[in-house]
Length: 149
Length: 149
Length: 149
Image (cartoon, rainbow over all chains, first blue to last red; front, side, top):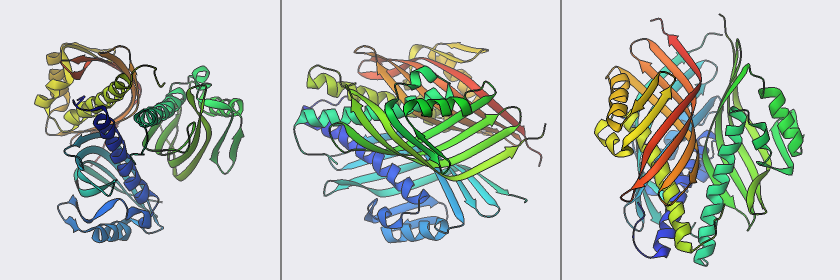
């Protein structure tokens, strides 16, 4: 906590932590509101995503294609409850983050999935802006419902 | 990110962002714990609230009357999971905010509603304190259950 | 808001608030990921926990023993959605915090509990690190399901 050093450094660290939290909020907003163009700014070009044992993605384009392909249809509604940030600044332009997620995915008309997971992320600052460099989601519980109507 | 300028300005901006997040936490706490008197400090006197296509409210009193009227009864339990803040300071005493919400409303004995929504807010600083000037909730999914007992 | 005083004091206050939020995130992570050794750093040695009318605990060891005993089994999965922090610094090394929690506990194979609660905490800074000194959880709603399989 309270790192020693010049006051400007301490202020910059607080700004960096806030910027990284906002980056992550933006990521989930872009998913839940299907803002695939804005999503491009979230990731580095060479970003990687590990969304589970069978979903290892390389490169921003592959990540966005996957998200759009699996969640982008008008018949799909998603809600990501992302909280409990633990951001560690590991250098002037590198950081890690841990989060907890409850997500809810409705594939209309009748499939519903609830997921419970944690995130382990790496971030980098490029040209003054923080981006996701890698993201790893470990799902601890999944619940699927087939609704009868 | 990391705006240029004097260090005091940068610190004040961080304080403002924290104060706005805390204001929003207080708003939800006042709803879920039915603290209608304390709720008065959350809004400007001329605040507006857009809680959906049929619920457009003008003025702090109208907003609190609506919340108290619809959620204030002892038989109603509410839980607002509010997270993913994206606060933008747009001037020395103005700001905007986006949030994601999952809410759960139990109207005892047997009606339950789950809502999934995003908030778009405006805030202003009046006499050194941040307040909500306008709030807009866009619900992307609502689920209603009638429980059988 | 924006306390008067030297800039270093204001920066330290922002750092303290961030450290306390991170402490709380760590607490929930240690529960949900069953990290009982790491959990020791979260509490002061003389910490107290009030988890409800029948669960009043004294001392870090008693708290961890209780959490491990009730939630530590491999057949138990927990998810704590903790958000809406309202941190008040009450001195150079003391603070209070309020939070909102939705928790979900799955006792396999067939018992599920959803809880809706608020936290009222006290924190102290010891040797430069914030710890939980007391925690009180007030549950406003509990839902239990016995699943049929």
